[in-house]
Length: 182
Image 1 (cartoon, helix red, strand yellow):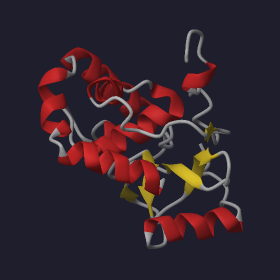
Image 2 (tube, rainbow, N blue to C red):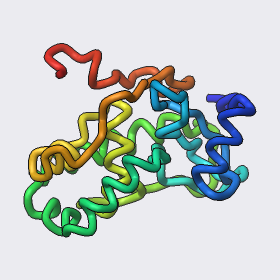
Image 3 (tube, helix red, strand yellow):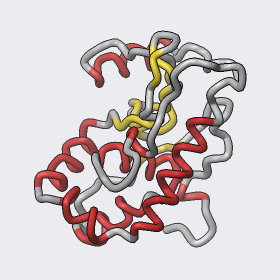
């Protein structure tokens, strides 16, 4: 699969400002704030600068959600989630993430490859920001589902526009478009 096209100049400027640096590899904006059009989540190509593996497929940029996730993390949610979230559901979420990211790696690639699941984690929970980004693209992440129940009202999830997805990620389905979604 060929890498994704360069982002629009306004997106490139906004993403660099939100990261406080230039991105290290190709990316696509996959979630935006509906009212402003500001990028909220980017999909990262599996390699930075050519050959360096990038394990994080989805990166949370939205400053409101990032702050809210940080507050929940500081309350001990990562430690709590490790024992509260069903281990099989979490392992399946890591596997889906890994499989989707790995599907973007060209078959002809022979060098180092990205590894791990959500945010590069092989198992368990490391970073709620990575789980939130995965959840927002439609993955239905079990850690964020648990956090939403454990910390009701902690996350400002309304007003987000999901998609379009770049080539290779079209199989993702926004949570709001799924049957029975609220």
